[in-house]
Image 1: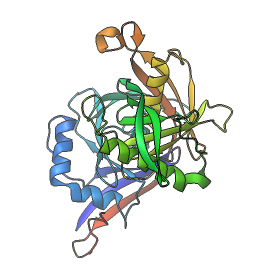
Image 2: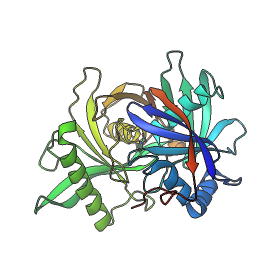
Image 3: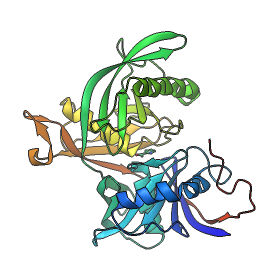
Length: 331
Ligand code: PYC
């Protein structure tokens, strides 16, 4: 019988389940190395923690692991219903709320190591949590993709950007925009459309800069909130949608806005989610030495994303070998 202690939270509506004890032994090494061990030896634990019957398809899991940097508060690996994530903005905010709940960190700034680099979490007195994310940038602008849509062929155009995961970002207007209403009652259509885009990217072998799979699709439209500039729908790798505005997705959006000269460094961007919650972001330009500009144009930014997380449960998962679904329902 294996017992795994977890803390559940949600960040602007999107859940995070953090393993705080009883998880797999991942050894030392970099977080990327520990991720390799998790993926190769303990994928069944990933599935047991987030998949049915203990979890659900849109639940994101996280495990606290040993950091290499002695100044870091923690290392973390994120995972979901189908595999592992590079980074996770809402999950990092959920992790910070969890560490705060456990008394392992207090107000102030703390380094968290992720498989794709260090991020900083800053906890304000009002419990708003800001992550300073990994450097983010737009890789390609206005990329055409031919999709099968409702029995016909259509070309959609979008930007490819990195914000800790690879995103394909599609606007609503224009001949090659998505043209869909971003509302909860339209969720099935949004999911179907985004899956068609994802399928076309895979088929046409359109990738991120380093051949990275573009496994998040982000659709934009007008906000319903007065304090936001935009609303989004984000399809995650396991075909579920992010209930939050997606931290890495908002970082990718900020990188595109910066590259287009549409948002100045330090200016605030309110990103509303499909459920009406919001992240507030801003960025600092990166120096050219850090890959921040090409030919004078800003291409690399350091995004900051602010949101709130609430703790929803402290519990123990029981993995009983006699349970026919001990390792979860895997597709
Ligand atoms: O907030 O970055 C994020 C995220 C990625 C997948 C789900 N949430």
